Image (cartoon, rainbow, N blue to C red):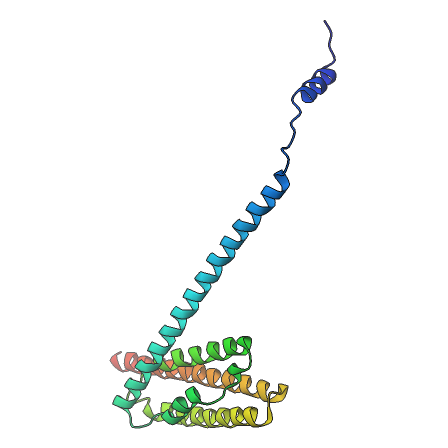
Length: 194
């Protein structure tokens, strides 16, 4: 009655040996290909939707900011520059990747501009920063003209990207200064009330 268990399992496996139907691999690869295409389509659709929403929001912030600035203070960052940029050649027109970089910085700049709170106390500080920003806008316009006239080169494209970075950094610095000013006023109010 002694039976070797290994022999029993071996016989059992041989009895239950499965065979794959002809064409199984082709069907599997076709299904795999279809599912990967569906996933890519869904992912790219979501990315397009997200990018559209970000652009719409940044444009909305830009309009809100320019309405606030024109209603509350007479100083405006050169509006003609913005209108001319829409019709002028920009480095974003060279390639989709550069367009993404340009859109990223422009959207962030517009958001920072929209977040600024202008008050009589901060008007002088904001005006000085806006003058610097206007100078950077004029330099950006000059670099775009140079890019159009001389053609694309690494130095001009790098200078354009650095200009956008400087504008964003300038706005972030202004935001920090405004926060510091607000905090110091709050501390003065607290000290005076004590």
